[in-house]
Image (cartoon, rainbow, N blue to C red):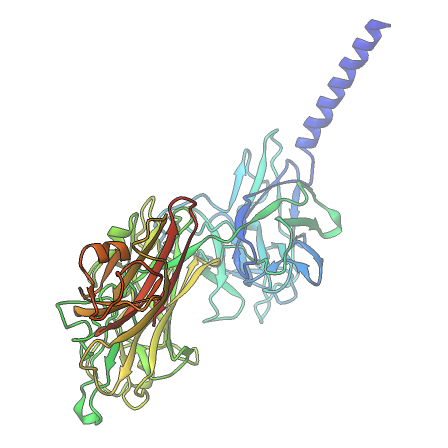
Amino acid sequence: MFKKRILAAAASTAMLSLVLSGAALAVNRVEVKVTSEPIASGASCDKAGGFSLEFDTSTALLDGDQITIDTDFVNATNFTALCRDIDLVIAPGSGANITSQADGGNSTNAGWTNGSTPDELVDSPVVYSGTAPTDVEEGIIFHVVGNSGSQRITVDVVGIDTTTGADGRAVNAVAGSLIVGPGVNDKIIVRFLDQDVNFTTGGIFVDNNTTTDDTYDQPADLEDNTLCINVSSWSESTVKGNMDSRNDKYTFIPSNPQIAHVVSAAEYALYECAKANCGNLALGATSQAGSSCGAFDNEDPGAAGTAYMNSCATVDDHANNQFIIQKTNGTFDLVDYIVTATILVNGVEGDNGVYFTSDAILTDGASTSTAACAFTNASGSAIGAASYFQADGTTATPVAADTDCDIAGSARAVELTTLGHNLNLAANDDFLFINIPEMHYDLGEVEDGDQVSVRITLTKAPCGEVTTQTLCVGTFLEECPTSAGSETMIFPYFTSPAATDAWWDGVAITNESATAGTATVTLYEQDGDSATASIAVAARSMYVNTLTAMISGGVFTASSGNAGTIGDSRCFLSVSTDFAASGFAMIANTATGESMGYTSGN
């Protein structure tokens, strides 16, 4: 009995081995491989994984076969969808000029050539593992289609017929086919939507829409061969691509591969080296003949008093008013990014009188705030060509910075988008400096008090918004101010500074202007005593001290007629400055850790 059990177990094991080996080499079996990409929670358009389909031995790929891939859908309020159109032709081997048929039938062979000049070649999107198919490589192609807003990607297998009618369509169609070779490990592998574009033979092509429609004669680029999906309505943690085929011909292993996993949105912030201020931009001549409307460049403080060409340079010279994005969680990925910059006037985008010049947009990365804040206008590297657009979306041709007060229609560039680039980032960089190009304005369309801002959106190419940040550049004025402004601030409560308890009181007074100034500080106590201090504050600097140290150090001068001692009663401060200022107060108990702080100023 015991021997019988051993023999039965051995037989079962052998049978299982046969079943498993047979399953691995089954006809019409397709092994599906895909990367699961991290996708930001709530993203309206972000990158998912690409596909690799491995067709097993003796499988016949025939004209008319169709494979579908559907992204997850639960109901009308919980679904995923494509956020970009997909329309690709995969032409293996040496290739052929493939003209798509509107009815989805056969296509024509008219001598395909791959005109790309790749930087780095990669394997063909269709590769043979083992013996080549029994039919020639050009006997079959794959047409991959998906529409933005839908869940479905369709992969049509299309045979080629060299006989054509007068209209270029195939007649007497003969279905092309690829039959996987008879070897034990033979496979046909088809890869798509994986961002590969520079192939050694054949390749992936798109319709360039500039010549004959439905003619796929343009090598696909990174954007074309990327799967981008919308998960803004998706409440689950993963996204799957659910596989199926016409007449259930193919068995997919697995049938629902994971193409993305949802992660928390990364954290980014606009980093301020000093308080970025909007500053002042002097309006030019009131006559077009004057031609004195100088362009302005946000980041370049230049020599003292020359922050902007033709600006209110002696006041608020915009030092450190730079566009620096900090990744507050981790570091930047070393991938291709797209930068989109949009000009806003009074918070509104459109044709409002302010435009980009043809000045190059520069970027650079840094791993410390010190390095990031040390950037000047000349630092960074140009990130190549950009596309410029007018307010109606048509192409703009910006002109060089000059003093022209009348900007022609074609030069009214209110938005620019760069081509994909790594933005000169290096490993471990968590700061990104973006040098906003110079801008100029049309004197007939901007007015006193108009405020100019730039909104920059950083996107991982070709889909996946990283962050959007807005920085105020300047406010147009008909007349420049003669001083950097003034401020009166009230700090309404402090404890008794000289009391022998655990409480301490501190104050910070910030000079936001480009010139040094004086803060006049008056201390008023609850018991009626008062004192005054005159404190010099350097440009773009702070005065920080505790009230106890100010009193004991003789910073305050007691007012005449005081009945008591300065510092022995609860108090408040009134601060008057001859510069644009803001302030901060802090009260804390060293024994218990209790603390509070508050701001004062503009």
